[in-house]
Image: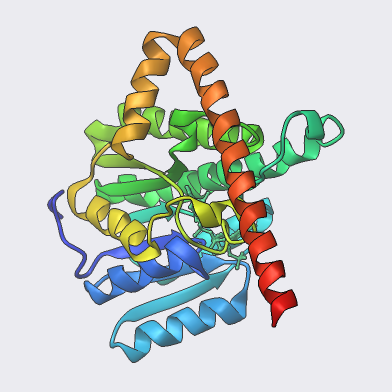
Length: 282
Ligand SMILES: NC(=O)c1ccc[n+]([C@@H]2O[C@H](COP(=O)([O-])OP(=O)(O)OC[C@H]3O[C@@H](n4cnc5c(N)ncnc54)[C@H](OP(=O)(O)O)[C@@H]3O)[C@@H](O)[C@H]2O)c1
């Protein structure tokens, strides 16, 4: 199968397909003709996504699995391999974020363990289990969903950012080692995207967030053109600045984030007060 293939006929495994970016990507890829394998924990949500895809004339299969459980990953991959002749693309998208300062984390080493478990070890295990089929085919594409936070180092996201940084490093090793065997690897380092993941964080309501359909479009674009890496221009710029002048850039970013969080908290409090005053007048 040629490298710059489109989606028709491709079998694409997408983890975290029960909501957010994964669900939107699964639907867009199915519309483009892919046979999509949907993985996540919530069977009812996977079933809903599958039904919506089938109702549009698409092709989808569900594989409920808890990817933090090694046996569950193995069983899920065994079922996919048994039921599909090819695995053309694996999208490691399932993930979780934790927003907590390091000062508040001193008694919470498990935050670091659980982000690694889903954001890193689950993606690695999925890849290792499906890789032999890709090598046998002489072609395969792994798309790892990462975060611009790896490039911009926002405070309060140490556990999350470190787990995605590990995933980015794994992506680069995989690409370097197996590109000549037909395996391509893409790292998508997203900025904030409006999904269930960002919804609980009040101050995100006051910062720009990418639309979920656009975020899913990055995955569709990656399936078509196999880039090694995609992020936003500001994230790229900060990454370059941090590599060139780490001490100065990190110090300036620390000041910037402090000011930004203070401003957002102020805006949020003002709006809340405005709403309360309005409520009292009514
Ligand atoms: N939203 C953002 O601002 C943003 C920015 C950068 C990167 N990302 C990354 O984008 C990816 C998708 O996130 P999203 O924003 O679309 O959030 P989301 O709507 O919360 O989706 C997360 C998905 O991961 C699945 N998942 C979580 N834990 C799992 C587990 N143990 N086993 C199997 N599946 C599991 C969830 O399904 P179940 O609950 O059904 O298991 C869900 O389908 C994540 O990797 C995230 O880190 C998001």
